[in-house]
Length: 223
Image 1 (cartoon, rainbow, N blue to C red):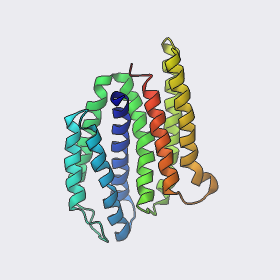
Image 2: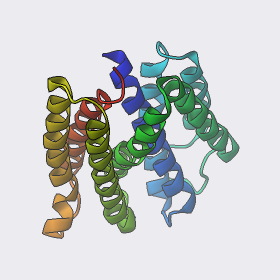
Image 3: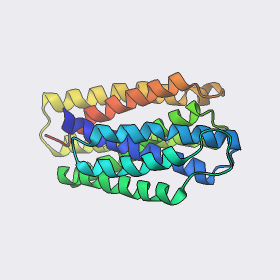
Image 4: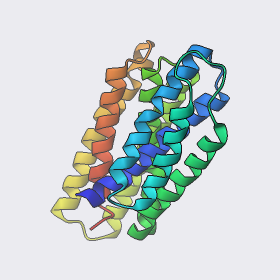
């Protein structure tokens, strides 16, 4: 079970970390938002600990990102913390992501790349909403990126099923992944359909469904 969980969790953490970094460094944010963004980094910091039993490399982004979060002001501030530490933490997170996925084969690397977009955009969006971000472009682009990547994931799942002898467990994995994914898509784009502001609980539920869907689909690649 942990083997199925680790790739999806690693992709979600790294993707969300990159989304927060992009919003912090490139977004037009006020001092109050910057402090809230700094607090949001504590989520990927402690999430890396989940992966330490899988690989000790996960402790490296945990330590570096933790130092960055600890040294960043969480109140109103015009400083974005020690940025070089953030860049190194992102690089080490990418290395840890490769270390986790590479032993599982080339197909898993492709699946993991899609999960990086699906889950990273989904979790990253939830963290931005929790931080009361006013970056409306992210509220539109992140859900759409997650949905499009999930569509590509379903196409790949269908191809994997067609190229190999399908078993009952494979069919069940695809059906479960598709069903959970559709629920996740609905939760993520609800604010776009209703033309309202995203709500944290709904975006978080969408991420949860997407995570479960990707764990189910990972069974097609990992025997």
